[in-house]
Length: 97
Image 1 (tube, rainbow, N blue to C red):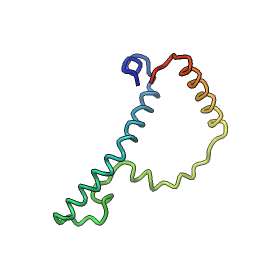
Image 2: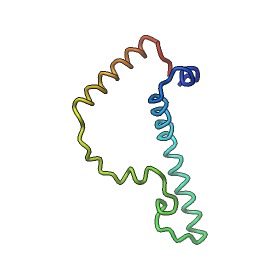
Image 3: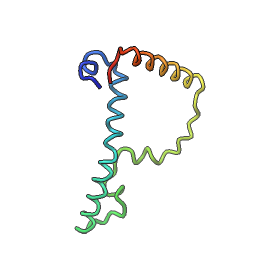
Image 4: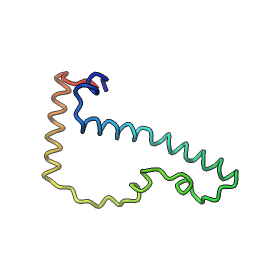
């Protein structure tokens, strides 16, 4: 994302979405770090049975959710309309990413 846009024009919700995306992009790296740390700790005598037990990460609890929430058709329609508007604005060159 363009730093000027991020610092001067981005809304709070856009910044939140960007930060969530950045955290998601780093997830694989954290998973690798957890596994390697767990292996080293097990060799050193750690008693944790799993890597998740050894180093819990915030998304471990999220993965346990079954995701059975109902989708609100009105909210879905609103999100699709917003996506179309954003797509048009990106095509017009209003925003840079």
